[in-house]
Each structure stands twice: as structure tokens, then as C-alpha cells.
Length: 194
Length: 241
Ligand SMILES: [Fe+2]
Image (cartoon, rainbow over all chains, first blue to last red):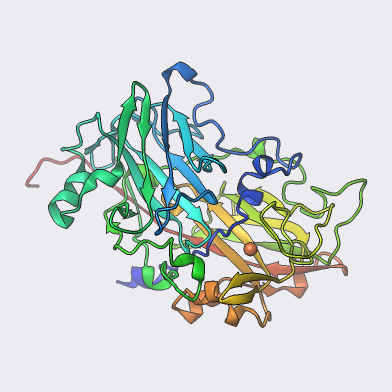
């Protein structure tokens, strides 16, 4: 119990605000010359594009309007289920005109966690923006995979009785998936505390 | 084998996500409870940033956008501190990215419509990868407070935005640092979205006269605590033992 006393409180979140691009994607927002490259532009620089899948979609607010001033960050393993180095990290924003984001990456493999349990292929997604006092965590699973044995999906179905469809990217073409996020409303996406 | 897991986040010490006094949260904050589940390897692992990406002036915002050696307007400050986890273990190799307004409270951003001047020698963007003892430092300009539309026009206290990657993706933190003595802090709905007064104060940097590098630069100390990582070692034993 003494141990509990020695656990300090985490620094609290504050919103990333509307100008997060200055710090996170300066070259993209028109501040060249400070950083050579923005980080997270390509999640797997050593892999070939032909193996990539494309995940696209929009982030909708409570009026079901697609927003463009959000920062999206993804973290995933490779096709063999390995997390390593900087591979698998991507950072991007929706297009100003179409309000759609698009991520080109490799399809992750199933991944074994520390407990030895196998999780279905998924990508961790973090959403930060103006109006969000804390960043939001969710996961992108894929509708052409078997999700029935995934421990997290099973937990949701058994305990919360939630519709898990908001976590599943829909295959719309050979290598194309659609993944929309609803911050609020009837279609509100499942967010996690993991 | 090593089993790692992140300490559960204590939401009593985090901001309310839905906080109508901060108007932008009304249409963006989710209403349903988050689903709580033990962290897995997907949260315990995280991108590893190498010091190679860091340029010479990345942590010096006074110099990193100056033209012809011209100094930005405003007074120079040093912002420094450490990144540790909840067990006070230093987090080395953490990537800290900061962004801020210039001395007149204006961001170098196309969407900032505040009727104050851009400083051509100041972009307000910096980054650092923490040392073995978790320490970091930035040389910058004191940011100005600025008005923004909320419940009518309100004013943000002087602040610097911080984004931190620890060793785990689940330790990811985005926050803001404030300055000791700023009377606007207690009026700010974003600050007040945090329910606990003591934790709110942990975002306020302290003036540190002893660390002032020279007579023309003030120092502010801001320490950051990320989620703790529990490590346990276990043997594979036969069931029943
Ligand atoms: Fe700001």
C-alpha cells in the first residue's frame, strides 16, 4: 500500500488548440526551414508503396460536420506483428477542402501482447484538436479480418454490449478502406482508456 | 519474460472533456464513457525518435527563425525542466515539441486572425529529445496573452503548448504550460476544465531566478509527469503451482 503513496499524479492534458500545426507539422503549414522534415510523414519509409493499403475517412463533430483542424496520429505494428523503432508511426490532418484524411500504410499483422493473447490486426489512433480538452484514443480494425477472438473486441461485446462497428474500417476496394470517426451523437465512436 | 503495463489514468485529475464554458468542447466532446481495458503491447510500445532528427537550433526559438541575425521582439526566457513518469523515473529520449504565440500574442498560422503583428523573426516552434536524466531546455520569447472568441471575447493567459512522446504510445501527453503570477490563469475556462486545484497548479511554471542564464534572460521551470510503466517479471509455471 505504501507503494501507492509513491505514485505521483500525471500532468493533466490541455487542448492542443487550433494552431497545433506550428509545433507538429511546421513544414506542412508553411513554416519551412526549421525542421528538415515533419515527423510521421511516412510510417514505413523502407517498404514499397505497392504493398500499401489506403485508409481514408473524416472526423465528424456533433453537427455531423467534417472537421479539418484535427491532428491524427497512428501507431501500428508491421505485417509480422512487430513494433519497432519509428516504423509504424504516422501523423496527418484532413484535407482543407475535402475534409478527408488519407493514410497509406501497410496492413498490420496480428499481434501477441505480453499476456500471450493474440489481437486481430489493428492501428491505434489518437485524435487531438481544438475543443478536445484531452486527446482521444481509438482503434482501427479491419472488416476482412476475424475479430471474434480479439480480447478487446470480445470484452466490449461481452461487458458493454456496444456495437463495435465504429472500430472497424470497411473495405471499399482492393486495398482501400473507409474509416469515419464520430465525436458525438448516435453514431459516436468508441473511445478507449487503455 | 517481462510483462509491462501502464498505470491506469486517473480521470479525477484530468480536464472534463465536455466543458461548456469552453465553447468548442460542446460539439466535439464525446458523451459516452470511455471503455477501460488493461493496456496491451500496442499502448506500451511507442515510436522511438532518434536525436539525429534534431537540428542545432531546434530548441532555440530565439534563433531558429531569425533572419540576418535579427532578434525577435520580446523578452528572452529559458524554459526548462524534466520529464519523469509517475514513479519519478526519468524518461530519457522523450520527444518534446512546443508551439506558442509571439510577444504580441500572435501565432504564425494562417488561421490566426488576431489583429496583432506577426514577428518575421519568430515562428514559435521548437523541439527537444530529453537527456538521460529526463531534462530538457528551450530558449524562447515570452509569449503574449491573446483574445479569442469563446463566451464573447475572452483572453488566454500566456502559455506554451507542449506535446510529449514518452517511451509508450499510451504515455502520449498534450498540454499547456502557464507562467507564475499571470492573473488570467484563474479566469481561463481551459485551465478550469481541470477539476482539481492542486493539479491545475502543476501546469504553472515557476520563475527560477537562480537559473537565469544572464541578466537578460529569465528562467522558468516546468516539470512533466507521464503515466507510469509497471514492469513485472514472471516465469512460465505449470498451472496449479
Ligand atoms: Fe494557444
